Image 1 (cartoon, rainbow, N blue to C red):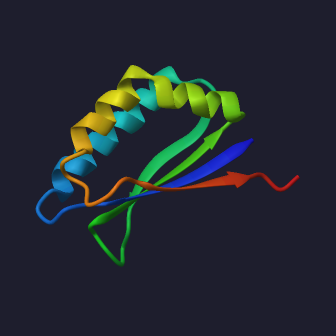
Image 2 (cartoon, helix red, strand yellow):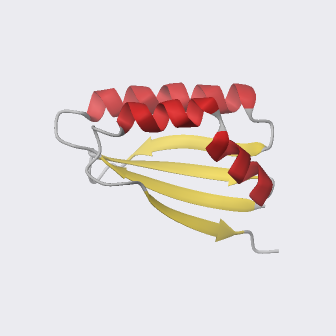
Length: 96
């Protein structure tokens, strides 16, 4: 199992736009990616201009397939001008 945390830093005034793109993305992932075991965006309570994605995939292949989906590419395009930098991503291994 592979875990992932992605942090988005949002430009001022773009919070609602990015939040909506995240909601749409999560809905598509839940509908279309059976090997994505958990995928949820969260807004930081300390900084409302940060969104955290918590994600879990069955394996590395599932994560790579996620990154190649049309909905992922559309999402990245939709938010590219509304974030201050590329997402900060941390990959995690399950403790077994």
